[in-house]
Image (cartoon, rainbow, N blue to C red):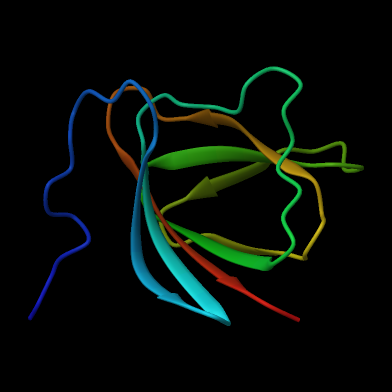
Length: 107
């Protein structure tokens, strides 16, 4: 069955939408849709898996702990976040969905 990552994009989301596309013991792939969402004040992701993430549509600003500059991600930009590297989403485009593809994998 064929699916499209841009199908069923809601225009108004109270929270980020996370769809798990693949889930196995060593790999998880998620489609994340954000519309003006960001991490809660003081919250940092600290995951036990590595995360490779790409912005497919929209824009986002990502903060990596210990770095002074935000990563401004636009469509096509991607970043590898090592396991236990604290990070947070500072901003996503408020007027259109930001569509991410996130790949989580072990060491």
